[in-house]
Length: 135
Length: 344
Length: 125
Image (tube, rainbow over all chains, first blue to last red; front, side, top):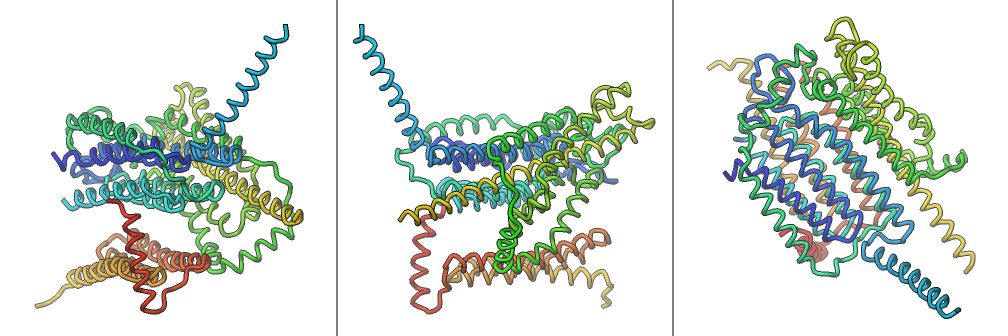
């Protein structure tokens, strides 16, 4: 059982490491790396289930009977290229966040946002008290 | 047996690298390790018979994504802030999810079992009948470009859309650069990277040639538009890295490359429309020629060409916009520094 | 006892593969044992180029198909170009960033201690 399921367990471990990086780290670039690890673990999962014992690469050749399953290969082939494009989009957002906030640490961005919000609510409060006092 | 040993070694190494990535604070090292992670994954895919996928992952995971990370890190700073709160809650969530998933795997068929459900459903049709139906010996290409062509169309559109997104977020209007400035940068780079430049100059034609080989050889061996696109793009990245962004921008005209990205998708879609006009359904290549197999070959050739164009140009667009943004930020920084010095 | 040509080729191929593997391992040992960045680089850069070459030559001898041999030959030429260039680029980058080679024994000892601490910090448990 250990050997039969080893691939899937590694996939789960990698997936959880990626997941952990995404939820526990505050740095946005690190989060994206975590997301990439998560993504790659799914690729490994698909490719693992496509493998057939004693099979070869799915390129037809005379004298070979057993081939690995080509369908997951196709799905993952396109997913890798789509993955890098979406990662690039995420990184582009990170760059813009850095330019807007001066930092890519989640906590810092949050505190800056809170400050702005506080300023707004305070402004609104003082306005409303003024309007109440005026009549 | 030896295959199993290689498999287990590679997977264990992957876990080690992933843990190292999670623990590192230096983002430069993280990006470097992510590249190693990509390369290990690619080797694993070769061991799992997925040669087409390994190709792509080697070019994308170890090459392009690492490079993008580096460009971003130069803009956003190299070190990560230490985590202030205790990550116990996150660990708890991760452990619970992980154990549930592992519990789920207990019901799965063992690795490599030939009678697993996945191998009994559509795969036999692809393996047994595709030679008569499509006539391409690389099954991955047959499935990608013919059986699941509509799905692939969607994927290419996603890649294109991501390219547009990056363009919208990062593109900066630039003036035509001064020849003298470019020459100056060029000369200083030439002195600094003489050996690298000469070797690269010799290698780039071969990389481009190899990309074209992968593009057109996809019917007979591992290859196709996605792989060729990323390899082609990586040759251009190499050129931009060693000969400067401005020089590369002169070689690769930006408006033309955007046009090529759109034309690739358009070509793909047009093949589908033409097959509809010929009386078939969308992307049914059998009607493209009087002989169904010849029609399939023509259709696959055209759409792989479209995919290659779009993927290569979107990758180039993404890289040039990131690098251009970085250059602009640096310029602005320099000017600020000069102003500050003057004020002092 | 007469040796036919196939056996000789087979033995030669095995010999090349063995030497290649040995060089790979020695490069790996070098990267772990040598005191500073430049000597490590040297260990890996030199042995890996030769090791990859030897393994490729061994594989060429194993394969009767001319097309495969030509492909392997092209990989060999590429490796001979790329490996030394990569080593050069690495060493140059290190020197450019002010990393100095360790020259005398006391420094080696110091750096060993330093490496021990940093390695422990970085390595996954």
